[in-house]
Image 1 (cartoon, rainbow, N blue to C red):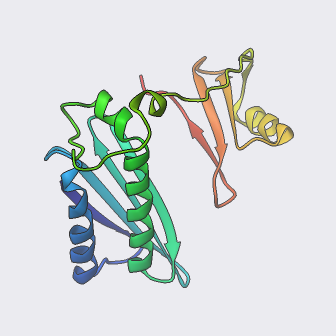
Image 2: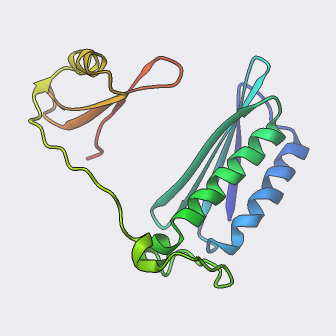
Image 3: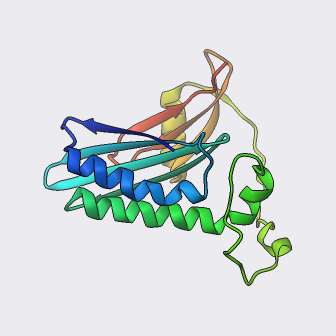
Length: 175
């Protein structure tokens, strides 16, 4: 696995990098050599925030944790990603037979047919052309954390969302 460690507004110490690489090596049994992991470390006051994103075969596994130390944040991220892998093991195995190698030794009590079922609610609504500001206003009025809309300038389908820090984000499709 290719691992890149990035420090935002800080220099990540070598012993922390070594610990991250050692812990992420645990996932080598799940992923082929083409997997990429990006680890971002941030320090926000007394709190340490770590974000781990693993990209393999077009699928992303992502976890973000805050703690008093990078080691505790790393442990939280590791358990979160491991939970994602185990929860979606059968789906991932089927989707990416050549990209992900899930160990055979692990067995599940739930039959494969039941693991593949999703409970999906479908909702349809007209996409009204509007500006980003109008979409944010509409999202706040509805009390949602995201809102899908048609950008009146570009005529692209976009999404606005509320970030954890209270700011807003905009998702625009890549051409």
